[in-house]
Image (cartoon, rainbow, N blue to C red; front, side, top):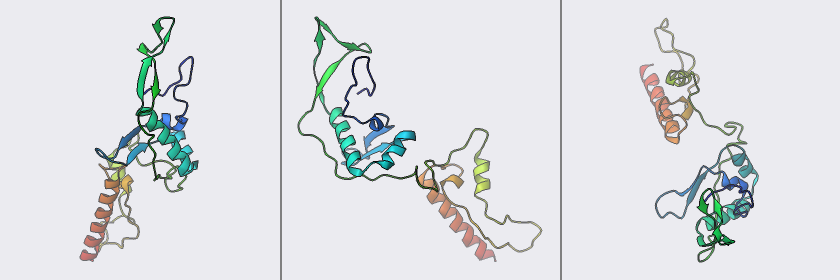
Length: 188
């Protein structure tokens, strides 16, 4: 299904603008009753302002459009109407309308600790920069014969060299810092 404006009409007007720009809409596993959809930018911020009922209505209308079956092509003056070289068709719903029950959503856009993003390696950066962010404070000094007291440890997906921007990166970094504490207090 194409979510775009044609010259003569808006196709599937019942699909909200924010739903037309989703990065994906798929079950979390084969035959699941749970759908996962990713949104970014303006759409993600808009979703945070909507009620669960508004989101359910928008997703339900979208899925119902996706599950519709094409009818015969519309013909004007003996020639099928074309859109991007394909025959345009009307859609009708098959069976009963799909209704969703519940919405779970993040609020990363308005969360002051995230402000809508997760970590990434910027142009000109490298995994070495992530390793630097993961170093505890104060930094170890080779002049002191004993291990310095650890005051601040850093964990989180943004401190993992290979799994940044992932949940498992956050998990692995937590294990890394727990191991660091165990080794530190075992050597003190």
